Image 1 (spheres, rainbow, N blue to C red):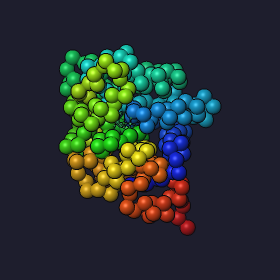
Image 2 (spheres, helix red, strand yellow):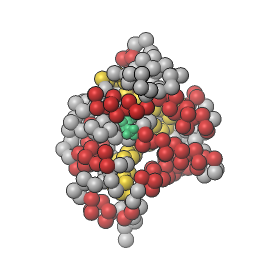
Image 3 (cartoon, rainbow, N blue to C red):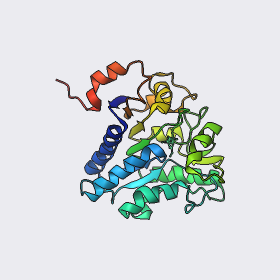
Image 4 (spheres, protein in one colour):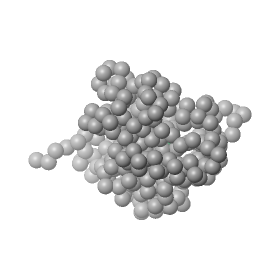
Length: 260
Ligand code: F6R
């Protein structure tokens, strides 16, 4: 794992956006795996800014989002379809045929999950998978106890996740109990993964992911098995890493270093 520690959340977001932009510059038709949540909002704002400035184009990429709430149709204001449409796909006028999310309103969510997993394979697999992390160590909606070999499937959300995500829903709305999520095996098949975490609320999950045992207790620890995983952190999210000094020596201020 490559651990990049940036001085503040804005620098971590910019570093993450830079990695995505660089991938698209090298491979304009790349297949991106995308995440939602509060952490990703400034990343998408940064990408929109870069695209509008002509620094990068997302027009030829294909994307597959990690997850969607079961029961929410795409047009629901709290669906991840809407999240992506408002923050990235709409502002850049991207071709909807190239942007994919699981259908939360599918008649049979289990069949939809299997179809989605197969569609990722048919697209050639994911070149760059963007990830956030839950305070409980989830990636996508692979909650603790998820099989580290899981395919895309329906998962029951923990009460911790539903409480954390209640902030996106109105006071009279209930956070859905289930989601379709890319599985951990699906995520591990990506050719490169970049996980962004900012803020003190992620510090213990980050430490468990990077330095803890490989365990379904912290699903993100499965990234220890990924051949090319980069973890981009601000100092607060990095606060509980025991080997922090080492990471900062290898990548001063989160930069790449060349041998020699
Ligand atoms: C959502 C997803 C989740 C979030 C995680 C962190 O697509 O993949 O794993 O990345 O719940 O969410 P925030 O950024 O809101 O703390």
